Length: 120
Image (cartoon, rainbow, N blue to C red; front, side, top):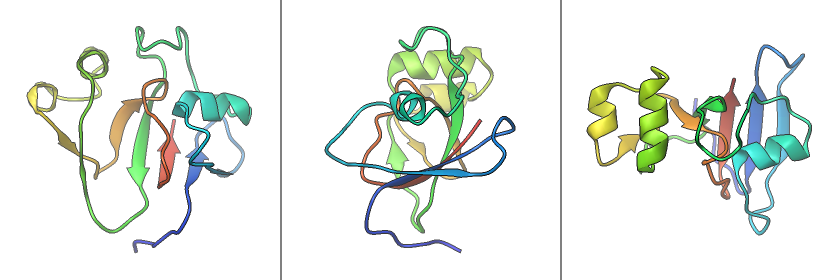
């Protein structure tokens, strides 16, 4: 069942976490998903932190009823393709639906005033 939210929140789930960790998002703060995770000591995998290696690939699922289309940068699409996270068809698409959960690079994903679940 979809939920309706009034403010931003990111829920992190992963095998390295004992429980789900929820972080409220200050929409004025800005920054990447990786920045948010590091600020809250959430052990997201990463190497370069600049979108060059693909080590920070995570699944991002919106926690809302409607599906929207998102655009990935050429670099992010290339790294996700080479890591086997997206197909060649998805690589060549102008935009992709955000549901089912889409693989994204945590260092490239800019956190906005939204409700999402991040799995790693």
